[in-house]
Length: 298
Image (cartoon, rainbow, N blue to C red; front, side, top):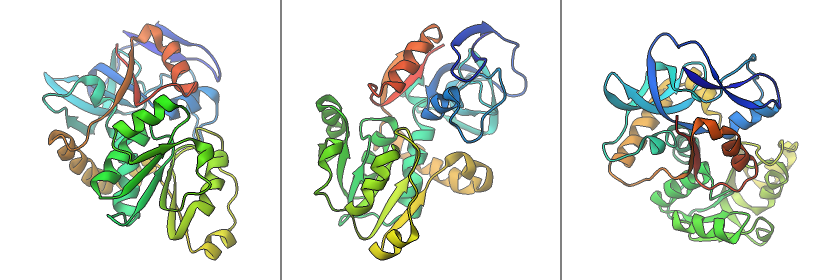
């Protein structure tokens, strides 16, 4: 079968013939590209896999005649078939595309866990969502609006800001236009300078949620800044929760699937590429020109 193989850090992504997977095998119809895949390719992921490596842990496809969403057991989703974890197989809603299925689980769990389990968000809350046109950003906007919050998104271009408003954001601004904002929650998948800049944006008892570092590693934050401002910092790492708190992830997934099935949330697919165009797909993600989730379609 064909799969996209990465042989070394910063190496090319090449479509090659690889052995068939064993165990519970999914016929892949779509594989989501997550920023963690980019970090692995560039050598910046905290737990680097051995090489050669097939990227991709979030897939949708067919299993024993059923349309399902699944998590790969040990990555390998950028392929025609992949071994999946049988404990993490979900039915794909009847009217949903495979591409939407591959855009669902990671992005929505990453937004859901802080908004529903770590924070108190309601009609009096103002939530600032960085990278509001991205996969996690779109999910965070939709979920925060469902909780009644006022949502302000950031994005780098007029087009992306318009896209964030289409997802439900009450307003969308450039990254350099946040100095006058005062909010209760910051959802931050960007990191870098934006992480540090978020601290003075928080009202007393506000919360900064660190999700990722697409814009650079997090700077050090002194406890004095947290204590003195009466704020908190939360972290979200879905991979570790899957291992150490699977009941939390299972409950959140059931709720999210119900919201999707009843059309109260909507996974956003920004672009689809065949396996042969995986380099272009990754370039789109790395260039920050993408919106929603970028998906490979074997």
